[in-house]
Image 1 (tube, rainbow, N blue to C red):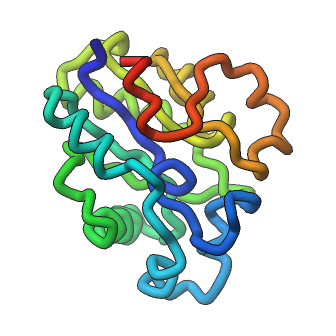
Image 2: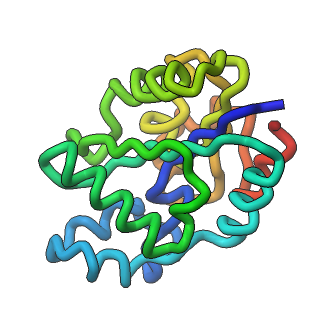
Length: 182
């Protein structure tokens, strides 16, 4: 049984309303830069609240590691906390870590270090962790690099352009599908 689950934010827990899952979720940041306008353009993915609530009832700790576009660590963290409150899911997360945007909006190589840092804080072994994300390079690879299990949300047109996602065997089409990997 997993004791901690790491989630990505953009494309995993929430998504831009108008793209119909055909464009990368970070396009919402390319507009006017107004955080409140960005949040209005985003929606929570189906079954997120129910899944997070059920995981918490099972005693599983939840962490979010999500890329945010702000310059400073404090600004990124504040933005992520604001989003979690906006979507009504802040209360579910034990650990919140905002990553810095780098070239092409990919998560930095340090995401695996962020995972390890949270595991150390939680006093949990790598074997008790699972990462859930929507991108091969930004979510799956850092989890594997950190030595933890990973599951990819599959079915998004934008991710199919990166054929490396075909290497992933553990895929789900809905966030609720993670229960079979606990």
